[in-house]
Structure formats: structure tokens, C-alpha cells
Length: 119
Length: 109
Image 1 (cartoon, rainbow over the protein chains, first blue to last red):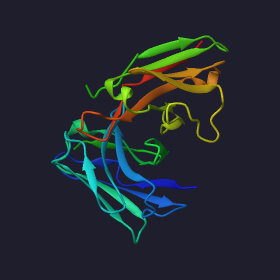
Image 2 (image 1 turned 90 degrees about the vertical axis):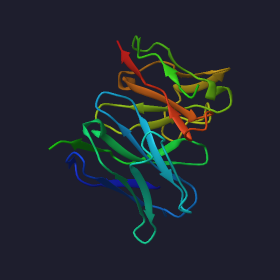
Image 3 (image 1 turned 180 degrees about the horizontal axis):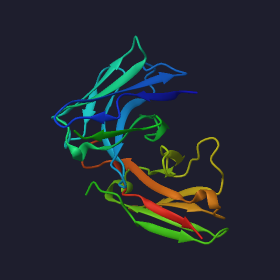
């Protein structure tokens, strides 16, 4: 059973870069089954799709974040990562990694990381 | 429109049946998936492909669809079903692959 484990800091200063990693266990990040995705949820609000990476390296980003976001995959470490540049308080949210399978549903999720953007 | 619209809040008496709906143009073409999210926890997939349940999801959860509306029905709601429920689907607008509804807070009375 594929599981996702997130890691990364919970506090980032304004204008700096948010970096999170999602490690895949019980399977390979290169299995071709999942679109490896990042989703965020501001406090008290709904879910917002950030972007995905496929094992081929193909990426797709939310147009509202595209200029600031990079998602990458490291097959040697079996993980994928999120970088969000030039953060502001509006980027404060719980960030989730997730996998979208062939059924177009997000059937696996990381535990979530609350990232506060504050000086 | 690429949006999915959900009622912000719905309530149901314990043991009764409740339907949570999701509306959007995308749903005329794509199936909806449904997620349950309890406070402080990650979302959990409860319905995909319109009416399929992942392993471990109770059969009181069911899905249906008609036109631009997808529905999640809980038959015999339990106290532990109190949660936020989100729908999502592929997005027909082409702006991004997926879109989420705003979520419905379900209260079990």
C-alpha cells in the first residue's frame, strides 16, 4: 500500500521560499500510476490544487501560482518536492501532497504540513 | 465555468439519510470524486468514478450523478460522519487538470 510522508519547515519568512518534500513508501515514485500532486488549504478554507508532476518529469501548475512554484521529483530518493518562491501571508496554509490515480481521484494523501508565513 | 458549487452547510438527524450536492459544468463530462475531512486530518477519498467506494469505506456512502450535479448520499448517518465533504473533478476549462468544490460542513444532530 502506497503511503506518503511529508517533511519540511512549518515557518517561513515573508519573501523567502517554502520547501516541502513528500516521500513515497510502499511503492515507487516512478510507477507511472500516480500524478504526484500538491494541494493546499488556507486556515478555515477549502482545498486549492497547486500542481502536479508525473514520473516522466512533466508538470502542470495552477495558473495563479505558476510564476512562483516548482515541483520536482527525485527518483533516487523516491520523493517529490514543492518549492514556492516569494511567499506572503496569503500562502499560509496546510500543504498536502497527494497522488491522483487513473481514476482521476486523489486516493492517497500525506499527513499535511501547516506552513505559517511570518517574520 | 470551471467551478464546482457546494452548499456550505447541511445537517442530518442521527440515523437519517442526507444528500450533499455538487454542481458544475465539468460534471456534465467528468465524474465527481468525494472526500471526507475531519478536523485536523487530511481528506479521505470516499467516492470516485461517480459511485465507487475505496476499500474500507462503509456502504452507507454512495454516489450518483445527473446532468451537471453530482451527489453524495449517506444512508443512516452516524455521529462519526460529521465532517467537511469536498467534491472534485477534472476541469473542462483547460486552466488546470482538477477543480474542487468549496466544501460542505455536515452536522449530525
